[in-house]
Length: 162
Image (spheres, rainbow, N blue to C red):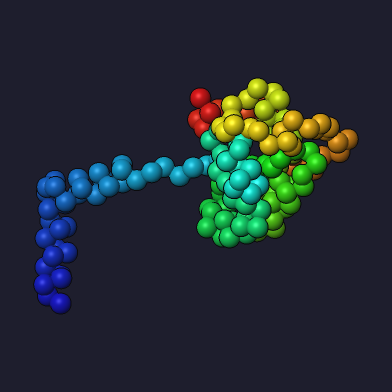
């Protein structure tokens, strides 16, 4: 026990004296990654995500959203998206996030079909049929819906898209 007290006292003295102990703590803090404040989440199955997804987004299949939310800070801004306006998974995922206590939540309901049709940055070969099918915007969108342009602007602001 006295040995550990001695170690603590020595570390404190060295830190106060400006020796390397305090500097190493600062180096570790600087090396830690910064917390991501905006996360764009594709809720489609991995096969569809691999075919086409918004550049800079992550894949959390819809059936895994609840688990993902348990491991995500509540102050994270989340945007969920899926295939197109006919797909309801993005809105349902946003509802789950709101119910779990997240306040900055959006659903990009135009999905990959709209994103690609607008010429916005994406990754993957984009060969799936849903991307080419008609993607008619409904008369009514959820109150937490976000447009493609607003999403693109948010991603630029957060330096997810360059």
